[in-house]
Image (cartoon, rainbow, N blue to C red):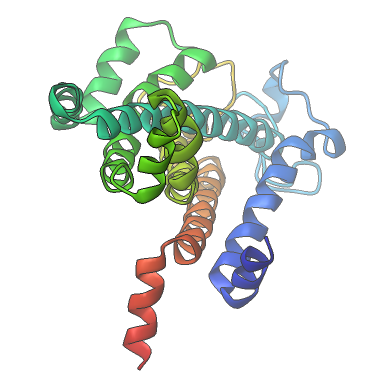
Length: 283
């Protein structure tokens, strides 16, 4: 933990990214408690008002306060992103660890399935699934998580292939440890560094995927605010009512950039090979 604090103190980008992430979380989940707006009832009298003292970021085409809707949209985007990343990382790690540890025919079959799914464009799969199932937040989490597990699976499988030949694995076998215990208690803890990095970038990817699907009309229902949905609604008013697309687009850009900065910092700390290469470059 002290090493993590030290790294974030040295890495300006990591500090900035972490600060922005914390701000976005507080803005999305704590903001509605302070800045209360009506996001249920429409108001024809207050449609598409420019940013002012009464509505700091203006109003949309049905009279909703854009700032208040941006807060609720942030909740949706963060919830979908974090939940989908957890599902994708958990399933991908188990899949890759099992395939890499047992090897042989099982590894070949499992990884050929992964290769086949990777060959299919993810956006195409998401659009097909989005048209088959009824859109909702839980369904969207499962759909995005069900597509995003392929990258963690391949990464963890590669690391497991290296770890399964180490001396500590042989020692556990000699002591009578079961294969399940070796995978769960010894292999997975040793890939936790890569796991943290993959999960961080997975959150950013899931947020962008949710926004893209909502932009295409295949995301969460229209009644549930999301940054992608707000961006889709505001694109037709870009020339005349810039704030309807500018603010949700900026929120998406800043949030994903900040998460990626945090992920880069974690990778710098947890990747020993990258650390050695950078030290050699400085010599």
